[in-house]
Image (cartoon, rainbow, N blue to C red; front, side):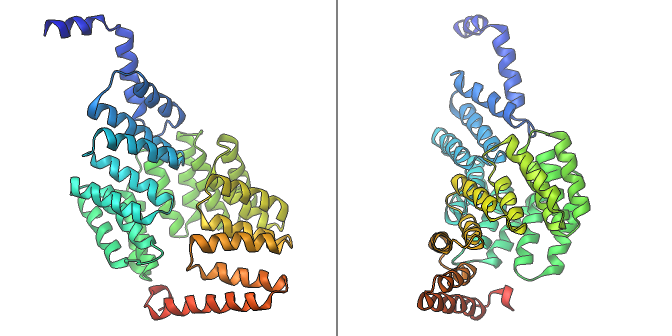
Length: 372
């Protein structure tokens, strides 16, 4: 005991104060880069061990995820789990990053592990439900709704759970239940930017109330003006509202803050496509692919941009990549069939068109609620 007291006395008071400030900042919800720096200082100080060190990696991973740096988020969650294999929240956090990368099977595995370790982990239930609904093969909407309903039961004030369940109800063609969940989400008063106004803004947006959505995103930006993601969410709302110029301005601001903003490049690509500016659309979708090479949506968007620029061979290449990523994407087959026809390859074009029809027929016959 005496040796411990001596050791504590030898640590400068300023160092303890800095450590305390860094913990507070690392845990802050709307601090972004300062939070990332604080978490990194805690990790690199070499004063933490065991679960405390795992928590520091976990918190930095959350900041990475909020910044949409998904690989970094997964790497930090990996480290947290390596240090503390029973850290349920780290598995739940990693499942969110998996889901953002469209790795649904891994998201389900990580969320299931979190639930095994902590049966009352609402975040894990919500993530597993979304992954089950998002799966390209073996979609399980009933299981998805059951999971997210369990998340609501565990934490009735979690806005994300209502948003998730509403989205799944919408996918299941139950608009009344979806609208009710989105409505419930708008009733919960926000307490922060990222986990408050962001979520309520999304709820308003899903209800088609773009004015209130934009107002909430404005509040989020007021709280955290350096958050690129906030500008991209507002850009999406402006885009859906039909306000192309404001959408472009917000997407550009997001890229100014973070040149690796995939959503910023995605929105700008859409705007330039809408404006029939194929060259800029190609540049933006190329930037999106460089950031998210695993995204079939990105390859499909650039494929369409190439086709708009009469570069059908390049369009075919990108659409082929989109189909490799998601072999059941009927839209990609339809688009590629047109490109083949333009390239005077009617046999390939007809094959793709027939495949698009077959995939659509399979969805109808499988009872996919979208086609009922």
